[in-house]
Length: 82
Image 1 (cartoon, rainbow, N blue to C red):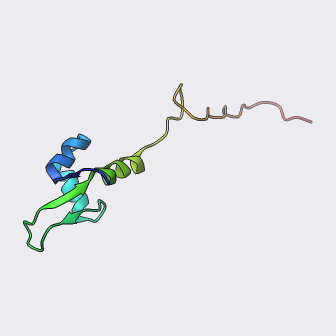
Image 2 (image 1 turned 45 degrees about the vertical axis):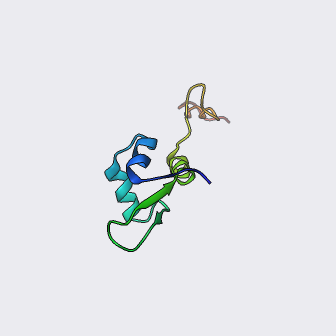
């Protein structure tokens, strides 16, 4: 289990806005702990869940030295083989 952060701390951890974090909390995208039932009850988010969220957004490099697979060359126009 990772550390537990409040939304503002989670935003700083990811380098994103607190509004973005709160929107994801409201829509259920980020798992979280809500300590109470009142609207202003504290909310805690585990860093492991934030890391998993970022992994879900990760896109692999498609070209260059970090690419896992070089793209296939585009087909060339030319004479058909007989």
